[in-house]
Length: 353
Image (cartoon, rainbow, N blue to C red; front, side, top):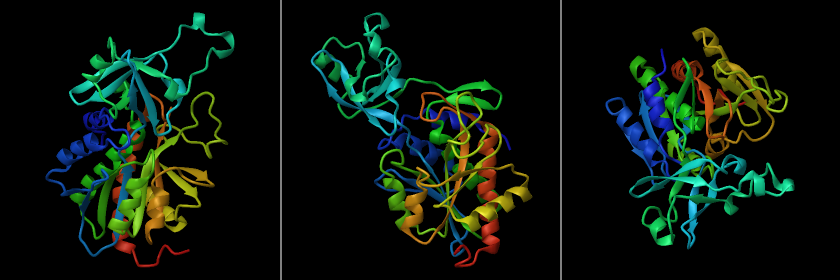
């Protein structure tokens, strides 16, 4: 089973910060046509199911949104002011190009910065808060700028999708389009193979900001088991301390099972057992507190057992995140195999400690 690189590329290049997920969901509607009927809600969530009703209800959830910015003001000289959507590092911006997604299409701009020569020595190497930075789209004045963009437009990094070496690639929004890819591929695999459980693949909205998509979905879909797929940090490049990120995680080492206060230990044990039987290498990471994913909201909404299944990524929340194709496909394969197993063994209450 090899990675569909063009499908992943299309997902990663969708401009979809929180609140703008429609571009991703449009791609998924086309992809799943003929596989499963898709459903959506006003928040921007999209989901599709395969398998019989009446069996255990398994949700595989990955968030569609990415970090980015939103235009908050256009000044008289035509410069744009922006604010962050999600956890965006202000140091990533000065001197780099961005895309403003206007009504008539993307508009390229540059985040302005002073030449190092005229920056006071004490301030060199520092970046101003995002709300003090500005985007230059080449406009001569406010009217010209507003003819091309508007307050409320989304802004994303101007970064392409690049295969660094066969099977490894760099792109913006790998967090979490790799996860979206995995849950959709798992649905395709499960629909083809069949089983007694019902698998619902979910592309959720607003994870990078409010987790609002997951809050709504937990109440609407009432799952028995939830598999939350997101990106996680690797410890395999200079400067990263495995102790600080809760475990040794390497690119290409397989999906990561999260061990912590939110995840269900019995479901996690079952996932490890299925992975071993399927020949899928897995890694583990121990997290004492919040997973910073949709998992908490989905677990709290009902009676579902939760599993955290993460895809290793380098340089998370940067303009170019790096992932390995084998980890993504292994994640999809494990979700499908675990769902099949749940269809065979699930009993109400089996995941109660």
